[in-house]
Image (cartoon, rainbow, N blue to C red; front, side, top):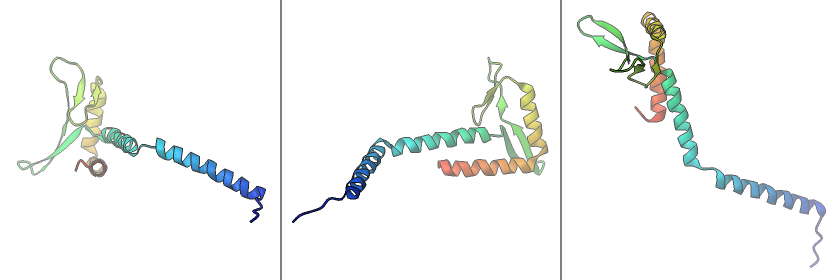
Length: 126
């Protein structure tokens, strides 16, 4: 049997081998666990960025919600640290402005908590 090998067949075969080599190289270098950990770290960073640094509590005595700040200064430091996310700052004015904003805009605070809850579910924290 005589086979006639066409130049087009050789070109297609050669290109197929090259694509296969690159696909195998990518599959070997791609680490799923590393990719998942990277996505998790990005979500944790996003979760910390969404922290409003305030907590809402329902008061039975007043029959209303009370908004309290989570930012405090540990003994022996001048830094202000959020007890929820670990945010640190030295600017007391910025902290008081953010607290006042959340106190006067409870609807946006509720929306912020919805975003936080959604991201916590994606992270498996809730």
